[in-house]
Length: 53
Length: 321
Image 1 (spheres, chains in turn orange, green):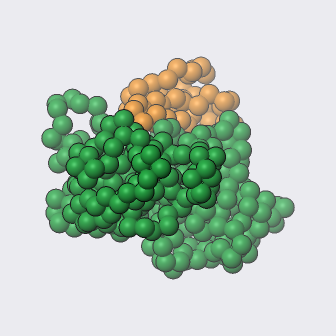
Image 2: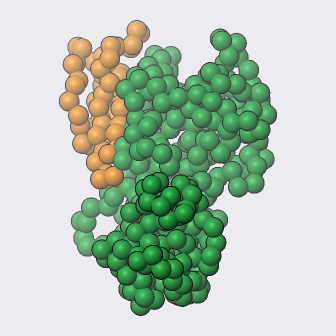
Image 3: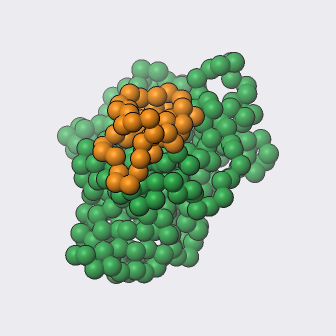
């Protein structure tokens, strides 16, 4: 495996009771930086989907 | 793998694809991916991924800011291994090299043994009787008769919920939970049968962690080398030679490594095995077999067929091809 880490913030519907900051950000693009993914997840309240391939 | 904390992202590094579901606080809800010695894609199904994703989302709904239960272990970066530091600056580090570097570190310290292979590699769930469905990685496709899973009371179609107190929603989750289990003894397992919960102890007998590692990139770095490789004969070709379908028989490829060439092995020779042992395996499994059962310098006799004539060619097993 080439070790590409891709981090996506799941956008399969916002869980009830979890509030996204700054409005409902439609986050659909992949990120290549784990720290940025964690920051986005913290901001939006969504989980992270990390892929190594 | 540069910059990846191996203690945070522990997975089977010989894989082609692996995934984690987690929250912003580092809590891992689950894993997806994994393989056994069969097809590399067997457990990489859309159905299996959807199921694992839904389970992760459900965990996230329940507690979106949950921190990991266990204290975070120290950060381990692959580029800090001595073998990684011998690479050209900035060279790409592939996932499978993690195992190579770990082996190198232990060997350099004089502490490497064959047993370390099994401690390092995630075990095959089938070794404890768990045959999992690719479309839903926590549901049993089958339970091997007489296996620890059967003895624990698990049946086909049961759904595993926890192993070793870890939630299970995929094949990768099962593998990881087993990987973190003790080397012997037993581990707790919880499952559901038609909605009814059950729990028990999954026995971990001697040798349960050992499995076919012939598919692993890691295998090629082990020593000694068999110094032979090529294409397995078809069933019909073996039959024409009076061999069973499962018998080891492969045609030596174009490139003949140095040790084999010096022993007299040539391109297109049919390799039948060593020391007249009746081996039932593929060429790849033979390469793993030599690496697991012999030492560098051991003298063996290769049994070879050339133009219909049987030949026995002695060779000292080399360190590498």
